[in-house]
Length: 112
Length: 115
Image (cartoon, rainbow over all chains, first blue to last red):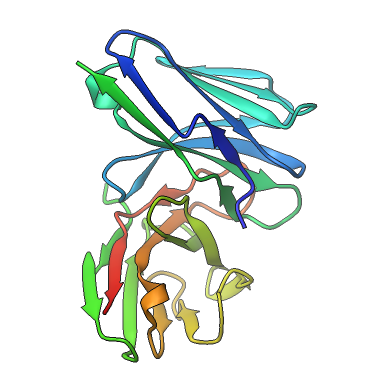
């Protein structure tokens, strides 16, 4: 079963604009991670935010986490055509189990 | 350094056949994970290993699926009596160890098509 639900399912923006993607989840987490996937193949890890963190930055990326609302957002600033891809949030639950539970993903298209 | 590699990249088989998918993790990574991704969906967890042992195989859909990691490095996912519903991209990932703070590095996947 999939824990996270991303919103929107698809997003199309102009190069240079910011892209905001949201993720909601159901159960308590240890951390939440965002991944990018090109052409339906390998996933690339973008950023990890722990349950005791509220905001994190990495380059043009900003991630927020609201554990009271069980939600996270990923902001890609000054988007580029190369950012066109599918984006997934994945949660790591509490406890010893290491598996990640992914959402269905958001398809981002950045028009040049 | 080399990332996670998976072979073959594509596998086409007939319904009822047996297939093996191989994953070569990053050297030194003790944890290895298998996920399955159907079209338009996110990856779904199948099984993970810590060293040679399967720490959690709760995601394997049924007993036709089996995975091994005999020497704590390379892993093989085995599917018996394949069905059309097994068609998907099978992703392997590895991490330094288990535990929530460790990033999982994914391979390019094996696209399995069952005719």
